[in-house]
Amino acid sequence: MLLSVYAVAAVPMLATAAAAAAAAAATAAAAATAAATAAAAATAAAAAAAAAATAAAAATAAATAAAAATAAAAAATAAATAAATATAAATAAAAATAAAAAAAAVAAAATAAAAATAAAAATAAAAAATTAAAAATAAATATAAATAAAAATAAAAAAAAPEPCEANSDGEPGDRYGGVDEVKSAADAAAHAAEGGGEHDSDGEEGEEGDGEGENEEDGSSEGDDVDSDDLMEDLEAESGLSGLGEGEDEDELGSDGDEEEGLGEEDGEGEGAEMMMEGKRQRKQVNYAELHKQLFGVAPAAPGEDELEEDDDYNPELFSPPGKR
Image (tube, rainbow, N blue to C red; front, side, top):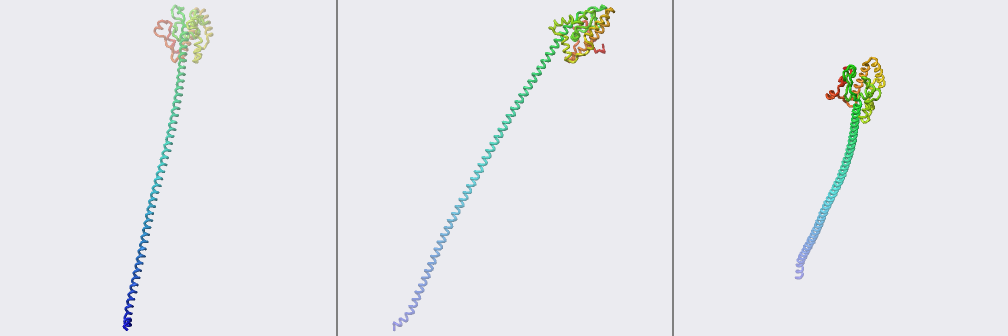
């Protein structure tokens, strides 16, 4: 019975112990669960840490990639800058080449222009030399013509030198033409030669020289180296256009008039009318020679000087006056 009592008393105790054991088991299970939960949390934390590490690695990789991209961009920029620099250098080189070509072209043009200028200057110098040579030739020709004219005048003067005057009918020496003295200048001599050796006639002796080409012309040809003064004067008159000045009558008519007047003079015994007519014609010839001298040489023939006047008693200053003042 005791056992039963003990058994009955032990049952609650066993039940409590069982309950306590169950509670302990539940607590242990709860603790195990909590531990499992903690382990799961730790695992989750580890996974989170792993994920964070992965994310960090990814961020690092991204940063590295960004840095690489930046470096690539910098490299690209540097390459672009280098390309731009190279392009600028090429452009500058091309510009320098073009400038050098332009400078060479300008220099070539300047050289060509200088050559053309030099050629033009040479041509102008040659033309000037030709002109100077032509002028010198013309001057030499003019000098030769003037020398020839002077020689012809001297020859004509030498050929036309008259014989000494003889006394006239009144017995006065040197008064050959009714009281009018004869001019002995070079102009008179040339005019005298142009008339054919002298047409005036005082005693009929020099008239013979006028009819033929007498002694004076022969003397002039010997003294002037065979120069025909009549031909020279005719050439000079023809060149100057004064061949007809004062020649209203030709020499044949003058000679015939002189012969007729000489006949009258023989009948009258004096022949003063014939002498005056011949003197007038001779004076017209003299004035025409002065005009011819002006046309040829630009100046009037010079009158004889004092020495010539002293040696020449036949000089008549009236012959150098205008016709209206004689």
